[in-house]
Image 1 (cartoon, rainbow, N blue to C red):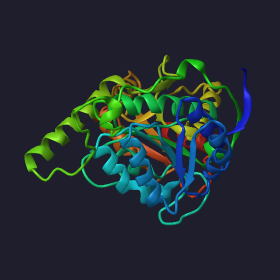
Image 2: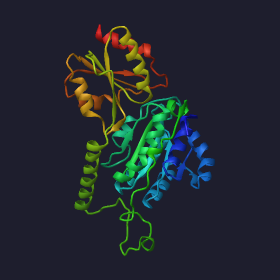
Image 3: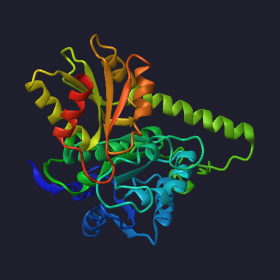
Image 4: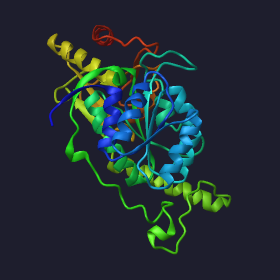
Amino acid sequence: MGKILMKGNEAIGEAAIRAGCLNYFAYPITPQSEVSEYLSHRMPEAGGVFLQGESEVAVGYMVFGAAACGERVFTTSSSPGISLMSEAISYIAGAQCPAVFVNIMRGGPGLGGILPSQADYFQATKGGGHGDYRLLVMAPASVQEAVEMVMMAFPLAEKYRNPVMILGDGLIGQMMEPVEFPENLKSEPSNKDDWATTGMDKRKSKKKNIVKSLFLDPVVLNNNNLTLKEKYNRMKREDVMWESYNTENDYRLLIVSYGTMSRVCKTAVDNLKGEGIEVGMIRPKTLFPFPEKAVLEAASKKGCEMALSIEMSMGQMVEDVERSVRGRCPVEWYGSCGGNVPTPEEIMDVVRSYLS
């Protein structure tokens, strides 16, 4: 059908509908409120359910309820709102239900500000709630990629029976770009009869499906956590995604950056190349699982003297970069998280200072 000029938040909502999700519960918070505004009229048009909850806490459990029934369901929020949903996300992960959460990040901590940030990296990748659980986390760098990742998120959530998070930022939500909705990313929901609470009569089964995350027997709870751990290991084997940029030639410095910050870094890499300074870049598309092998290989390349994590946070991704590099070279950080996005010129100056 060709490309359509859309705001990121609206494109995210439309992508979910195109992916076959007809259940959306949310509570407004800047800078993602346009998703709710768009779906308040678009979801009923598509025959789906739109409901604004009384709080993010309530929304989290609405998502849990729909997910337990095996329905495709998602919500969108921004940083403090995701914090309030974190208990429900832990429950959903513990009960092994598929659901999709979109976080259009804003600055923090606390109320912070409403401008773009990437300061929820720890929250998303290390588990923002309690207990041993992980989310599959994808980070788009454009509105088009946000569309594609949202459409991929639902089958991935069903594949692993686990929450999937799209980690964007205020730029992704607010910018307008041409997008198209790929037909090849449409998918049918996976079979849910063996676990979802769809009713014994409907399933024509004598077996009750009970969705829960309460396991009072320590042996049973330990076994459940081992099952979850193997699931996360499978994610690492099968669904890690990244982009390599300008890594085919020799370089002295490797940039690791994700999301919209990586677009700024690409411009800096291109400009530096014009000056005769070669810089390689790895852009993680999944933050969990993190592309450890790709970063290690890029940092181990002959001539690479250091890795530089560039992000709109106070260096939250540095730990994963350091773990991936395994001491092959030093790892440094550059960025900001007050809402001002570092410019290509700033990044070029930082690179020159390290290589001088």
